[in-house]
Image: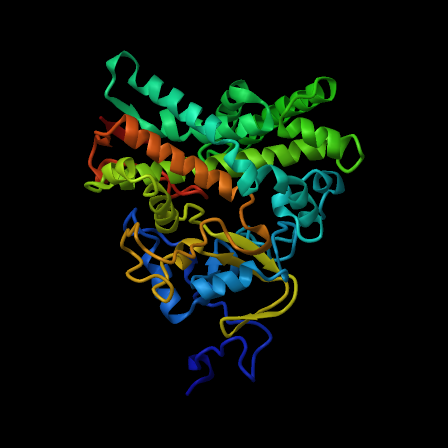
Length: 422
């Protein structure tokens, strides 16, 4: 056999070459064939190469698609969440510029590794634990009722539930937690819509982010002068006034909380409404059975797993995962959406089954970076579905599913619009 025809040796074999053979790699991300399911290519890889080499634009990296391998990567501190790390998924092979110390000082805690990440997480856990979250139930119910009142005002019987319910509800709730109220929620929705829109120019996106950063700085300055009973005031007193953080770092933390607590919940809620209203009897079950909403929410989280572009990591040491050796300085994308359809863990994984048990989904991640706001998101989703089922019992789709526009080009999957009637 000619040398050029020899099959490439897999990384991790005894006669392993210096690096994996990256010729002819499949492209990442793959396109969906059906908006209700992750790309079929990820399912094929999960069966044959659950840890596989792919190409993200110019950059070769590893794609993880099985549930077992996904958990292994996400709980291993040798995989970094820091975008400044060599190999972190960016799509480019260009040399990385030296990190700006000033920008890194005030970066999001979501991109920090231990022990720095743990310090921020411990600082925030008291506000987002299950017991504290239950205190937010009356506020969530009040926001849901207010939004439903607005939907039905003047005898209306049709609305876009993305714009008029799923988008404002989590924004108003997290802004209440922080203490910036409905005014802050309106500003956040306006600026984040521009900052996160891939169709906008870089200058437009950066400008919108800078404007909201300035707004947060003004709010934090006000909390120094007039503290209240809210999370920002508590963090000013306990962290800034004691020298643990400065105002800029607190602003970056607040921004990270706002983004993490709003966009994923918005689109999970919208997709959940699409799912529930499209299945005969499910809305009535939520209305009639007090405990029915919780299992429905868990299956919605598993089926849709809205961070559909995956969770990004960079190896800081050589690590073996799924029989493959991932070298230090190589990037990894963990497809939690593919992992949550793994038939090794979930029977008939492409079927929506609210009675499924157990449901060890990865919609909130896994390991040290598991979503801090998980209890709050669960409560928002559960309350929202139950209030809608109680107050709008005839809620149903206004258009066929094939007329809906899905956000495939966004990091967070979802719907552009969801017209419903009642």
